[in-house]
Length: 148
Image 1: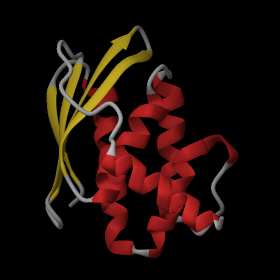
Image 2: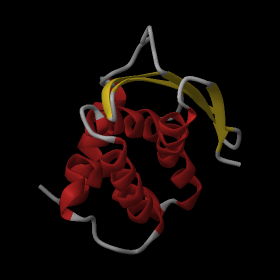
Image 3: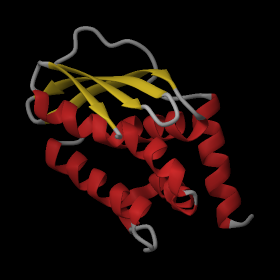
């Protein structure tokens, strides 16, 4: 199987059966994310246990890449500290915007590497990540993020 086929399969699977999809109450942070260019919209909620993400869930609607990215992201950051989640954000941002090979620590998130071949879709894949960054810093306040 080609690597691109494997990546495509991961994206399709996470779009069809998104992980950590649904409400979360109570939540320590709730952030709305919007990509006005294509209409992707999500609400990301997380519950912290000290400095660690104890629970994270998302709701909303978006394209396959947006949904799959949010699903992959929630799996990747659950149980991690703020600093570890920020490091993943940085790695995914580089993956989506630089012409570099995926770093070893990204695991399944490397499936997002194909998105950079479609510049208009990079915002679809990065919406949830920017929403997460905001959620990690909003400490209980409702907030919103836009890719524009």
